[in-house]
Amino acid sequence: MRMNKKKIIVITGPTASGKSKLGFDLAKKLNTQIISVDSRLVYRNFEIAAAKPNKDMIAQINHHLVNFVDPHYQYTAGDFVFHSRNIIENIHNQGKIPILVGGTYLYYKVLLDDYDLPKCNINYEYRDYLNTKSDLQLYDMLLNADFKTAQKIHVNNRVKIIRSLELIREFGMKLDDILKEHKDDNDKSQFDILWFGLKVNNREMLYNLINQRVDNMMDMGLLKETTANYKRYENLPNFVNTIGYCELIDYINNKTTLNEAIDKIKQHTRNYAKRQLSFMNTNKNIKWFNIDEMDFDNIFQSIFNIVTD
Image (cartoon, rainbow, N blue to C red; front, top):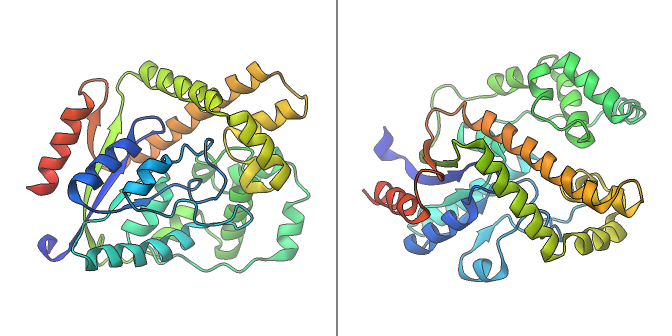
């Protein structure tokens, strides 16, 4: 069964763990291409805040689904599945193994576990009602309707919360149950998936990496990028719900100091990393490499040996 399936390599892990470099180096060594599995890299003009691969990396290796759509478009998990399946097929047709790199775990789940995502038409009357509610009120509604799902979404992410509430109302069940009902149980996945994950046993080290990354992003011009995008997008949900932007918008609007905004970016990024790890730890197929126990070269060589065995 396994040998008849085409291979996919997955590089995942929490933010700031080094996924992008590992995926890039592996793609170069295997002469293949990368598919980004990230709900923010998909948007144009979200450069520093989304920690996109630099121009040199993109010039050397094809990174699919990076700078793919305008931020005005609400890119969904369903969109990701549709686009990535076509890209995977094209890469396989070239005799190569696609490498999926990123930390948006819902995208992995719906793509690689063969979910037939349910179609849910927008109920404009219900959406208008939800839009009268504050962020906290919406979050409380989701907590009451689906506590498990609410824990995976930031309280200020109105777009995801509203969409979750719409799905729950449409199908009359919690999101996990909706996905289970639309899953093909005859076959776990159509692919032979090689799961690799980067993580840190020393949580303090991960937090230090995150803090340093945020400081580097500020040095690279995150405030300037935020100001430019604020002029472009103002209160566009995909913009204001992005970590790095939402905190600096408060600074731009004189609601906080710059140091307070930077501290909030670090805090929110750490919280996001915790949620990523909670998601990933439910996947028993991931072979984990601890970046506080092995150096990068050894991790790379170990993964390369497994892939080419």
